[in-house]
Structure formats: structure tokens, C-alpha cells
Length: 117
Image 1 (cartoon, rainbow, N blue to C red):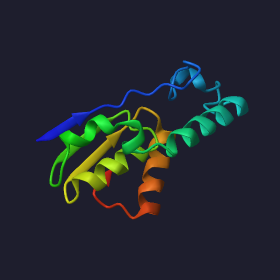
Image 2: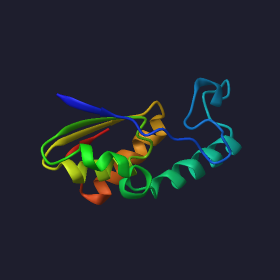
Image 3: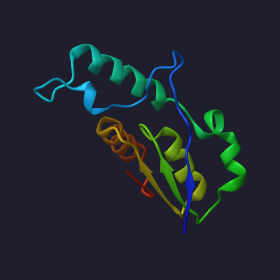
């Protein structure tokens, strides 16, 4: 049984987080301005921790649990959840392929093996 969690995120200016089909040109590529904006937003979310951004989750998770994080972004909070539930399992999902790529890279760099994106 998975315990679903979702940490709601929006940037300080109230703009939409993530990507949509409208973010690409007719060639399927992001505009240079949108690419810079997306990179900056994902970078800002990479420094978030569960302790600072979602401490209300900590009393509800523990070792051995299975957790689903919907809207995980680059996975910084998700990796904190993975540490808290180890040896349990965490799955992070996000509509942004860019964020998922970053999350996978971040988890690999951190050596966290009980999380999948």
C-alpha cells in the first residue's frame, strides 16, 4: 500500500510551476527565454528539504513505508522522504520531463536507491 503525499508548489510570483504543451514552439523546442525560466525554477526547487518545506509530513512517515509523491519536481523533498522511510520505497511523479530528469540525476548523485522517478 502506498501512502500518497503531495506538496503543493508555486513560485513566489504566483506563476505556473512545470511545463505544458504550450511551452514549446511548432518545432517542439522550448524558447530560449522559457528554457532559462524553467532551469531557474527547477534550480530553486532543488534546494528545498522536507524539514524546511514539508515538516508536517514527518510525523506521518517512517521506516519501511511506501510513499507516492505527486508533483515531485526535481525530487529534493522526495529524496528526504526516501531517507525517512528507508528501507521503504518512494515513487516521485511530475508532469515535467525536465523535472523528472533532474530528479533522477539528483537521486543518483546523492546515492539514494529507494526512490524511483
